[in-house]
Image (cartoon, rainbow, N blue to C red):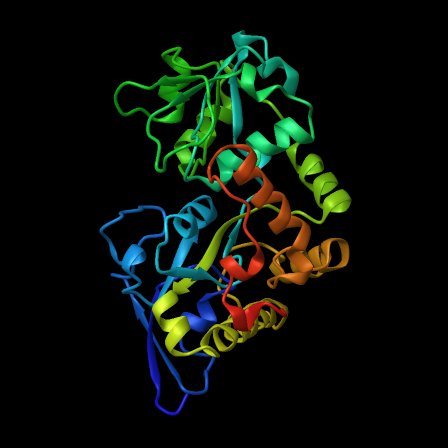
Length: 322
């Protein structure tokens, strides 16, 4: 690229992306412009910038990736998994619903999402394929659907706006299976005798999943404007390399004892994680092949998309060898 390209980037607050947003990772021929007005990757609008390609980068909920590709939106992914969450932590049940094992969900009402949320999609797929649950026997209590769905689900609409605790207390569902980002809700669900976890040993289950499959469930991915990708075919690779450098700097900050996080013995915890897990936050297509293939297959099986997609259709061409 002869001239410097300006790329609008959201103010990503993840520790592994902060060095990039802070300007600590120079990119030859690229000027990153951090902005709080960058598009939100969880709110999908067919008339918005993500559809038209009038944006730079977006922190995209992975549940929206293939539907947007299939709809012809002007975006393309980088194999940068900006947020990963251990999804088994997000399944809570009413204690009086008789749910003690995954199979006990069969025939029950579960508050979740059908499309648009990677957490809901990962959990449905894992319940079906890893725990042998007949997910078609479940009544899915749903407040909204972000995209058209191309298979039949047994759906019960949730009337009104409620939090996860209210949904269980009011008897709208026997279990909830959605993202929880609220401290008060977590404390109630974990400590109130009216509720229990489906996976009380979720930490061990997450580790077993990782050991057996290499999957530490990503829920967000970085996408870029397809217009930018066409105009600057090498931009994707440059940005990928920058995100890799940002992650390395974030790890160095911890290991140099310079990271500003209030976690006791953070350095020692990272060293322990590296010994036991390697790098569960690894970017790139090759080291994440099983993760990507599994999630893409869940998209198809769950009717989120009508077709099956190759990497060349989803990821910027300059990142295909990562």
